Amino acid sequence: MFGNLGFGELMVILVIVLVLFGAKRVPEISASFGKGIREFKRNLNDVEGSILNPPASRPLDSTPYSSTAPMVQHDDESRPEPKRLL
Image 1 (spheres, rainbow, N blue to C red):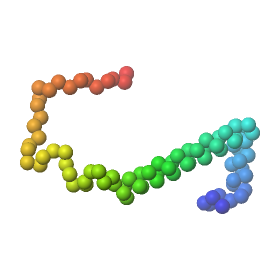
Image 2 (image 1 turned 90 degrees about the horizontal axis):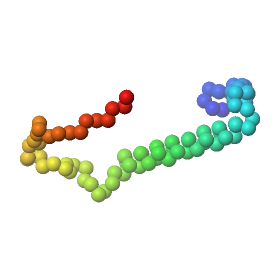
Image 3 (image 1 turned 180 degrees about the horizontal axis):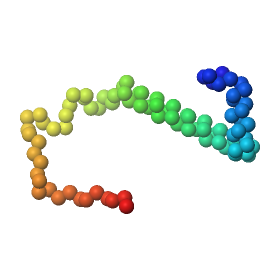
């Protein structure tokens, strides 16, 4: 049925879910699980589409910097300190 799970194993899992969450919460849980799977598949299809069909507005070999001009870094530039989490 589902991979290596048979009917007996699925029934045991269903009984455990019913005992843990109750009969009222099982439809909510299954609906949110289904929405999560749909969202995952939609995002996966979007990523596959963007990889297989890159946007035509930007050529793949163009670079934003000229290859003849050297990159110059200034040590005296002041950069803001990153936010601290703690």
